[in-house]
Amino acid sequence: MPAPGYADRVFDRRRIATALRTTAARLREGAPYQWGHAGSCNCGHLAQTITRETKDKIYRHVAGEWSEYLREYCPHTGQPLDEIALRMIEFGFRTDELAALENLSDKRVLRALPGGHRHLQRNRRDDVVLYLETWANLLAVG
Image (cartoon, rainbow, N blue to C red; front, side):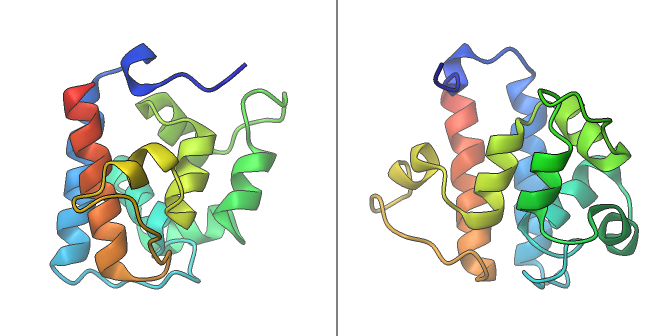
């Protein structure tokens, strides 16, 4: 069964869009960014926004790559959820969306980019900011 579109989701779109925009603004303003650090990468920064935890605490929980972490702590597997993953999922994010954020790869977001669809580099701060803002805009229109 395909993942539901944004219009099919039941959650507070404004709250999620605000979290995405807050994360983008923090990155734009120069927050420490390092794609290879689980607490300072794309998902790590969103986790900081949602959980208000430090990058170091997030790093200790994830202990590796977000894509692996999200597979291991998926609510559909029956595996126990870690505190950070659970808080992000309860906030309204799906694990596939978070994995796509880490790689800047959600086709819906890429199609909605200003200027049209294009590839973004997952480890470029400006591309992460653009992705987050575009995703927030998609949520705003449903």
